[in-house]
Image 1 (cartoon, helix red, strand yellow):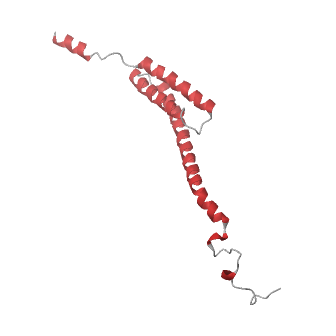
Image 2 (cartoon, rainbow, N blue to C red; image 1 turned 60 degrees about the vertical axis):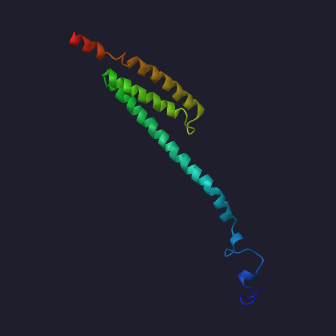
Image 3 (cartoon, rainbow, N blue to C red; image 1 turned 90 degrees about the vertical axis):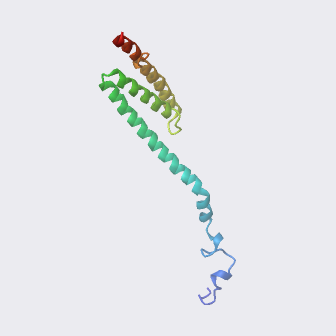
Length: 131
């Protein structure tokens, strides 16, 4: 076995060492994985935001059930419908869940139309005041 003094310096050998750029294939893999890792992080953040929107929508549905005012119910139902529409396009949910969100969006849109104010009536009221 050669002694330490007999071995050539690391920079003179043909085998790659950690001091050389091509020494670690992991360094090139890490660089190639950076966009994937960043995309994965972004997808995870989007999934968290989508779950938060789902929880917020449940809160709005609770508020809808607790308020008797038709104008408030109209606005809440519109917001709930839009939230479900947004959730129905998020890839972090499976297709069955997105289909449910789409149906709920349509149902809440119909609910908002039920509470929609009729045509504006202030003009008729003003005419009666001045006649």
